[in-house]
Length: 425
Image (tube, rainbow, N blue to C red; front, top):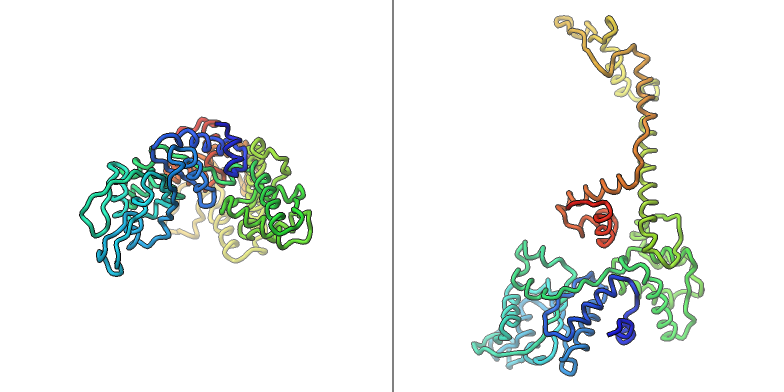
């Protein structure tokens, strides 16, 4: 089926490669009865993918229900999912059917599956493997025919290592995994989504759709969007309602974005031209180059300050003056070498100290410092970038997601750089 038709039918906006791949997998798996695990950050639209899978399946004429596992108290989730018998617990005044019983023949979407209690996970595993369940307070085994689609914003495989999630359930659920990309990983779609949202809100509130100037577009595209599409939609609605200007500048846009996230944005030399992924590496290298240049400048300034402190001890504090005195006067030249001054240790005259560093009269020490100051440091961006990536991977024990977050780049970008620099994880 044509992806554009799917997008139009379900209101999916965007043309990024990662989004198209996720949609392709959803379309392909829809006609089967396989369990699906949808992985993605909060706000990326995981539930929309569950609706697509159900609507394109043979179960499309039967019931669909979405259950947020994190919103149901631990003491009642078993009853909600599997039902209970009268008197099985305090407050159970009547028997009740659970979702797996009422939705039999249809699809159940278990959102935030990582929040499900361990005991409930065991019951769910039995349903997935045998299609059987038992109501709370009953001993009668019942059958159900439900397709399970689960979603999570957590790394469930890591949860299995800490005992928070059953490993057998993880592999049973993730028969076909679908990873929905975060909004910051599909920058080329941000302007399209924003335009769609402001047009919708203009119709809703009977106003003229707002527009962004080029600087505002650049700010919008490079904003981290921790809340993903949901956050972008909220910002678009705020701007549509609260602004009187119809052409929004970057200064006006900043008033609607959290200051803590704006301060973390890099300052890029280039402006957004609608093809940001093609310029992604160039922009990142500009940032890295500026970072390394500033570091080199700071180190040079420190060297100059240290030299001035040695040459002008009266302008520094007593500790620096004492250090200089100890360094330059505790040793006196003897036959071209430096020997410890006898007045400090009259009983133990030390032999001449041979040194590859201090082997000239006193004034040459400052010449050496000047010499070290002028040594040019390597500014090869690729070498530095590769070194930082290797350090980040070692720090996070090869976990790409954590390493990418630490580096301030997307996981997809990190993967490309691993291939580009031929880094062996």
